[in-house]
Image 1 (tube, rainbow, N blue to C red):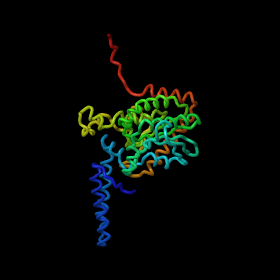
Image 2 (cartoon, helix red, strand yellow; image 1 turned 45 degrees about the vertical axis):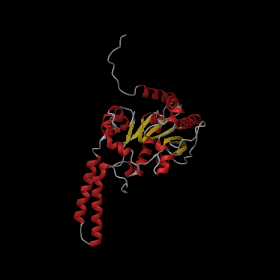
Image 3 (cartoon, rainbow, N blue to C red; image 1 turned 135 degrees about the horizontal axis):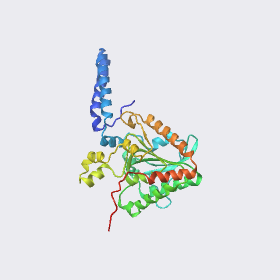
Image 4 (cartoon, rainbow, N blue to C red; image 1 turned 90 degrees about the horizontal axis):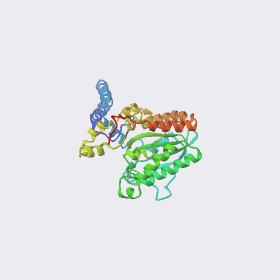
Length: 326
């Protein structure tokens, strides 16, 4: 397993031990000394430290893993799980938003429609994809593709990975909130099976704009929340540096989402996160999608729609404290 080039703050003790192990191997090679005992002890210390770090991650540390720059992005899953992907462009009204991509592909030989948030890795691509934050035309493009899927009877698969929809002046002028709201309404009524996988960040309405599906899956170190930790901290404590505190308050843990039935399945990641073994993670997502798609396709259409309605009708927990009197 290749060691990630990018190191998160809480991973630094582990990287120091790995560096020391490399030095021992190099020393043994150069001096022809038997350092097998020291090497074995160093390897054991590394494994113990790795288990200690990754078995007790805080909510904020999981958010950092969800944002890891070497984490697999949507196109990695599309090309790893699907075949024959053909990207379609434009919303037929304004322009083509590269932060939200989509088009037809084949999943195990079956035609499907894919919509996905796509981030960039290098500076130029990050800018062209607006750091994975779609404009209103991105959501209108996604809706165009989903309606096309409905016309031709294709299941819809969405990959969610965005800090949120772009909040700029241009997006407001072109009615980003309206574009997302229309998607929420139309996705709730699509007459084909729909699935979404949160593969990284799932921020606010920007995520929901392609996330109102029959099944929602999430990777173990991803998050799906009404607001980012920084945004929550800025509102509640007037200090974005309180993001760690906000992450705990928001319960940004995929397991919490599973327990509250916001998601149907939490997909396990390799120890340390998806970036440590992208191939294994992509394969796990493929397996989960295969299982859920088979279950959805076994349902009669009206039952599928009724179950989707019931899913969102009963989502969340609330308490009735009495009737307000005028």
